[in-house]
Length: 392
Ligand code: ACO
Image (cartoon, rainbow, N blue to C red; front, side):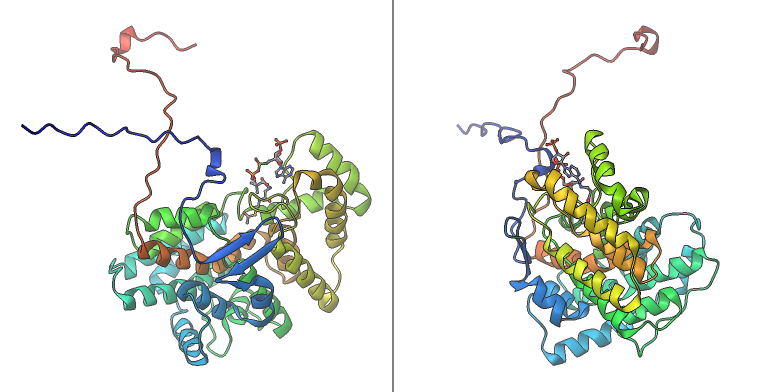
């Protein structure tokens, strides 16, 4: 006689960690963070070296395919991306129906998702499908960000220019002017700095979505939605607002003391992984200084410097220092980029990281399905409407 196996326990008794803090949710070979020493590497290469010597497309290739490209691989990748920059007129027409006052991150999420209507085959085991999807997303996301900027001003989007490299072309599509080469290079370096950062909220979101074997356009769209929140990518917009609210260097100290007293979060400060200054903030601060030297000073930078100085005293002992969002807004502002495009620009860069994680997830996939600790009511009998007690 055979007996049926005993039912498995529904949940494993592991301690509950809010926000999954410190809980490994995947294995990954893409990016490594040393939050105590303030070090960040992409595929083993220190971020500082990539930001100094690489281009964004070369870095994206490294992240997604695992190795720095040869000269031929890079040329091919650049050409493919250049060939796929244009976006279907149907998507542009759809964007014209979006409310002009809507947030560009919402416009980007909707347009990224709409790419799936055109290109979805879900042939996830076909290397050509995977390559084409990577190229399309890297190529078209900037075009869609720039298109919405012009559309909401009542203009037609302008076509990409084949003679311009990735970042210069984006700035051209956005501002309708060919950018200064130094400004374009600084912008490209900003994209490198934002391209990847291990299992942050949007990347986790991308991996969860990827684990269902849906198409990569849905993966990127879900990550864009997650990046939009003020505790994640959206903080860079808030930093400028905060600096403007403070107003002057002299007002910094009392403003910060009041904010701490009111238990306010200081935007652009703090990070789950870093207990020192975020290495990306260190590089961004230098990029901001380079920009100010060339194009003129920004008084808000002095307010930011003073805030960092005073906050080191007040928040430093808790391991709270500037994160990537603290100086990026000042850089983008100097480049003439509207504030609500800061996070979509973050998304342009992070698409590289999301796609790297998409590929890695598919390489050893298991659908994400964590458990929970139920805290609701015990079993109850349904009551007819007339018998239900009034809710006070
Ligand atoms: N200002 C003041 N206090 C802070 C800040 C901050 N920016 N960040 C954390 N703290 C304090 C908290 O109040 C808390 O103090 P307590 O223990 O006395 O209550 C302690 O530090 C721990 O804070 P948590 O919010 O629990 O830390 P967590 O790791 O969950 O949060 C986060 C990280 C969300 C980034 C947080 O630091 C924050 O909200 N920062 C401001 C928003 C921001 O800049 N986000 C961008 C992050 S980078 C990115 O996503 C690209």
